[in-house]
Length: 351
Image (cartoon, rainbow, N blue to C red; front, side):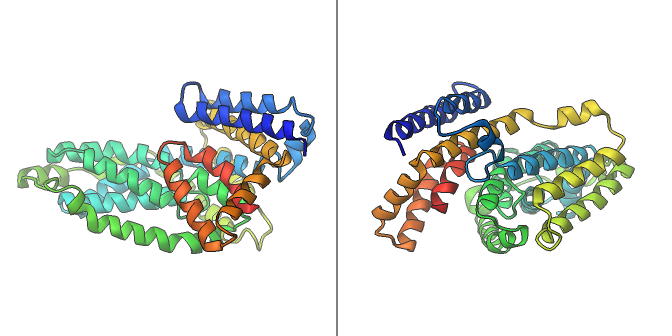
């Protein structure tokens, strides 16, 4: 492949990557701008961008995201997350440590099967309410929920956009992804639970009078639409059954998610404006631009060169290569958005 093309593509990508990481400009505009810049190279064309599985837009990820965005937005209208959070606090008998553990588990489980950001946005207000009733700082609780959301989101193919990119890139089924990741997630969550008293000493002292305030909360009031809740429950069962059996029924997870979203659109009775606002269009465009840039790196040979360099640095050792990827991912994920990083590294690891 022409060396100039590779240098040009790598330069455009690095500039876009830095702008996304520093958040100096809107990340969607940067990704789309980078994608447009790649079109100046003669190695890609519009047909390839739209239809090539290896070097174009990954429509499986786009439509999986779109379908889950719609489903999650409808579920949010039911109040079920708030119900579960209040129920958990009452089952903990007002004990701050037990409340933290139960909210941690609720957040992790919710993040595994729905969007982790949405799960935190729904659990956090209830957490603030419970902490206000107990007269304790909500900061440790919110930090733990952030931990739980990221950990839980890694358990399934649909729990996090990064999981979607990696899972589809590796052609992993929903069950295969779950079997490999869930045990590790359970171990990490267990370690987090054990470390809570060490991480937050003195955060669990509360008066008996405050506990009574928490016990007076009525979780039943959190449910805003029981009919919609039943509809969502039925659709979610169908969708996750489809995820589990998608290989057998010859349907990609993206099609399963879109089917579930379509059913909810038909039966929920919510307005068109609601669904238009429910979709994070900027996020979908960001992913599309990102896929075009990464696809161009593949076409120009940059990804192949990076993969060979990594393999050479470790002497071709699978263990050494794995540890290199782990260390680099650990460092970069600390200050770079994990979505563009995953989109970049997935084809490198594949090579």
